[in-house]
Image (cartoon, rainbow, N blue to C red; front, side, top):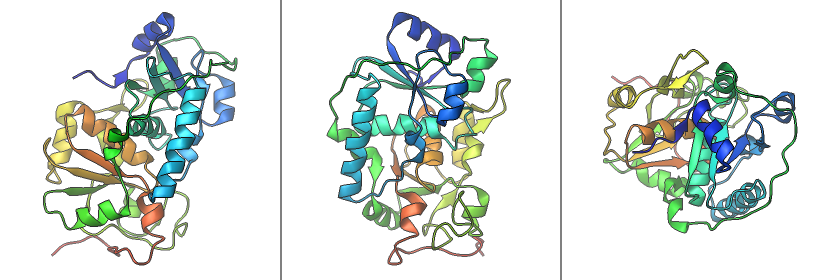
Length: 285
């Protein structure tokens, strides 16, 4: 299996060959201070909040198909996405990877280690704004199978073969906080019933230039602690699909074949009082 993670050296070769479009997901000020030469800034890969109903999904598709096309993605060039490090952006580069995968884009990569790895390798940095040639690409409707809505998650609760995997930070998992944006940002604290938990940080380990994804065997060892094997249908969620996207990429790299994300995640689920939740500490007898 070809890895979706690329090194700074591999990205340099792709840039020199003119075969890629580089997308920086950091905030505009960080981007302006220095970025991979030729990169296009798309911070709303991280900030955009989606709803999982039909209108929300249509808006998501339209918005990002247009933006990625405007960045120069033409269905032939490889998209290479990065953030500051693999942990400082809550998985935002991986959120870009997931969004392009959802659209069915044929070639998507993530700069492993992010901008920190790029700088650590002594690669050139630019402060010039890119002027990409606008393009476009066909959306593959079959690729949308990796996207879940609230009804899909309700079905997963009652599916004994599936594992619902919550990858939020510990304070969200134990129901003392509703989100990374504040304890009471959402109206309810808790978990989707039946979920198991692996905090998203556990898919990574320290590296010389910052956190890096664990190896296949290391990721599968983490998965085994909650009963996930390479053949287990895994249903991911977090708060808005960023940390879940980081785990999505880690699981796919490790060879877990059936992985989908409930992209609306806790931001959507907690706001609908008709949807069930588990509250309090997740202790079992």
